[in-house]
Amino acid sequence: MTMVINEWQLNGKLNRALQNSQRADFALYLAWLTPAVDESAEFFTPQAVTERIEQNLLQQLGVQQARAFCQTETDIDLMQQHSVALRQGGLAQLKLATYLNQPPLTQYDNKTRLGDDIWQSLSLHSRRRLQQSTPDRPEANPAGLYEVLQQLHGMSAA
Image (cartoon, rainbow, N blue to C red; front, side, top):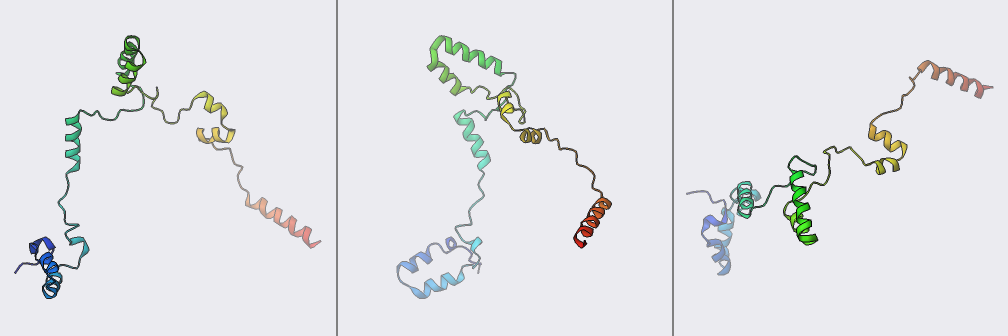
């Protein structure tokens, strides 16, 4: 006799016992099932190969991979094509060209680079944090702290 783990191994007997109000058979079939929740039929699904199917679907539909935000070497030709589309077909043609081949969003790939107008509106503390410079701290002198405590103790005693 084989071990019954999932209800699909009973070939619908559990469902028929429930529909025909056969309580004893239903209890027997239910007792045969494993008590582990992760082994129940809902969780016993084959491993999906989503990555391969997703790549296949992208290739079938002709969807391009997401581009980088910065400008690359091929973007100069792309922007010239957009310029030609604007001259020949107007704004509608330019919109269509940009939807099909998106232009770069930024010129540089430097994530820490800010525009001059933004840099000028930052506070001095924000500029310092962005430059990652910390002000010089004076060295702590434990003996000096002891002298200050002695002076304070002398004042309170007087």
